[in-house]
Length: 211
Image (tube, rainbow, N blue to C red; front, side, top):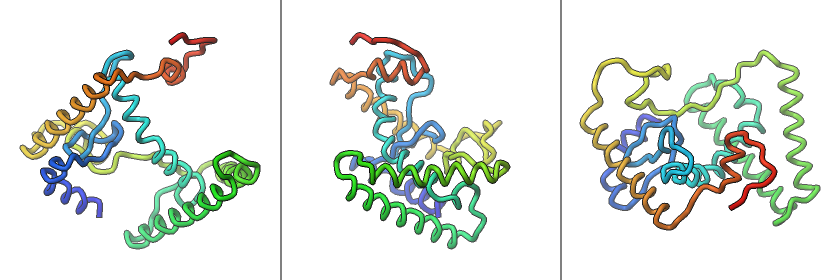
C-alpha cells in the first residue's frame, strides 16, 4: 500500500509541484519535490535553523496526536504481526476510537483544561505505566521514516555503491528548491526561532532570556 502510494507520488510529482502541494517530514526521510524535510546540522541563529523551527512547529500537532494514539492503545506498543488487511483494520479502529475520545474530552473540557478532561488523560497514562511495569521485557519499536530513501538500505544503514536514478535526483533537486524558497520567505518576514525555545531544546537552564 505504501509502495503504491509512493509510486503515485513519483508519477504525479509535476502536477503536485505546479499546485504547490507537498508533505513535510522529519530527517528520517529523504527530501523530494513532494516531501520537504529540515536542513541537516543547521547552526543556531542561521536562516536554516529558523526554518527548521517553523518546519517542526507545523508538524508538532500531528506528531502529538500520533504520540497520544500510540500511548493510548497497547496493541501499538509492538509490531503488528497480522495480515496487511488486518493491520489496516486495527489502525483504523484505533484512530476512530481515539477521535471519539478526543471529541468527548473537548466537549467536556471546552477551551480550558478542566478536571473532567484531565482525568481522562490521566487514566490512560496510568494504564500505560501499569502495563509497562507488568511487562518490562516487551519489545518497543520506535517510529521510522517509512519509505526507503536513496541514502539508506532497509536496515537503516548508509548505502554503499550504486547511484540514484535520474528521477530521484530530479525530485531531490526540486525539493531543495522548495525548501530554499520557504527558508528565504521566512527570512524576509524576519521570523526567527524564539531564544527560550533554543535554550530548552539544548537543555540549557537560564533564569532569564532577554529578547
